[in-house]
Length: 107
Image (tube, rainbow, N blue to C red; front, side):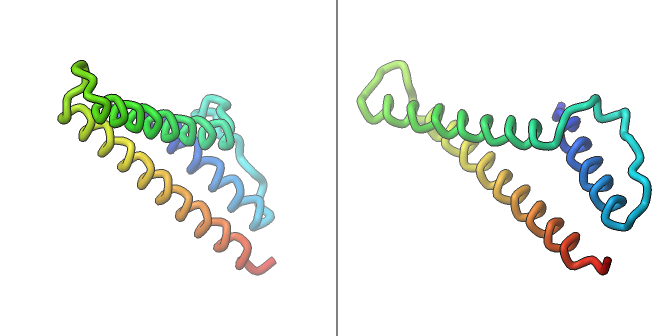
């Protein structure tokens, strides 16, 4: 099962920013558990970086003919790292789009 607390926290932060931009009172979201948006984003970036480092290390071990590493595991880890990076790029694109939408709002 996928942990959606980070996504829900991100949505909560975006809603609060939208309300603040519209001069509406910002409602506190108690369901988020008090995790900051920057912490969630920072942890996600660290996870992507760790996945890429692990995949790179495993690929290097395989190319050095390490008998403990097989090709299937290398390929799976490389694909996982690639997917996590692509997911992070999509999150970045959505954040940039949301920022541009907020900046284009009439004040």
